[in-house]
Image 1 (cartoon, rainbow, N blue to C red):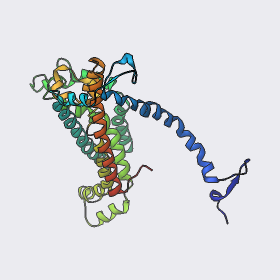
Image 2 (cartoon, one colour):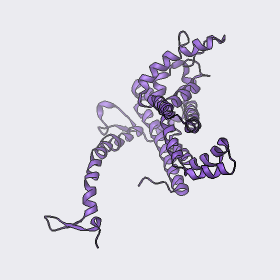
Image 3 (cartoon, rainbow, N blue to C red):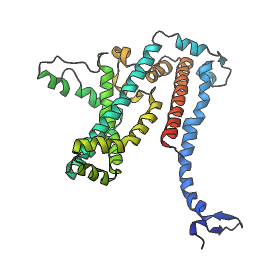
Image 4 (cartoon, helix red, strand yellow):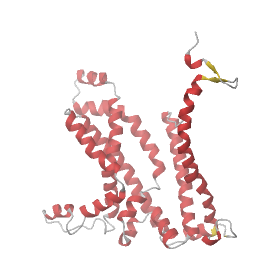
Length: 315
């Protein structure tokens, strides 16, 4: 007896097309608009990488008699006095974000999992999830108001305990940690949902067995819940390696200022200033190219590790 999915279907042209392929054809066609957009906005612009090796003059176009300079732009970038400070800021902020965006959502998911009032639980999930849908343009304005040293709610609260106003967005000692805290505030609701989904997939009989053995809620969390979440925790941690050089341009661009360049200037913001404000097209493209190459290696490595250790694959 033939299965319906394996039964060939005669077409008008006399060719035999597998029923399964014919059924999936509309799904593949649905991918076309996305693929076209990726080609237009991601692959075609790669031609502009050539600017990194030119003394680029916009009026001449990409190939309109531009003077090729070889590796001069890259050498110029590495000779810049602040380049390594910018790289350090990028890596420092990015690593802190990766660690915080692992620990905070995991902790919150474990706590929220213990809540038995479903109305309170769902309301809390909605509230913490909401900032994830807002852009940094909106959240940047909110953060500036909240952290204002004169009338911001945070400094007003600290003033009740005699603490002097803190310039969270204007002092180099505070700015990186403010970026990490605000990024966690925006994204931890989304990550919490992921970990809650991992918790719900744990076999309830494991908790019953642990309870029979005399384990309380804390021991059940330590010996059952966390091991059950281990796969998704390690997987997300490995996959986050690719964002080590991505400290969050949208966030920092909307919140930083010249007085915090020392601790808040990252690769992406430096590229923006060099390329669009200072018209140094060659050096800025060279910086972006180097970042892309390093990120590509890190992403490829992280996916390779994820596949070797956890059999994770995209296709």
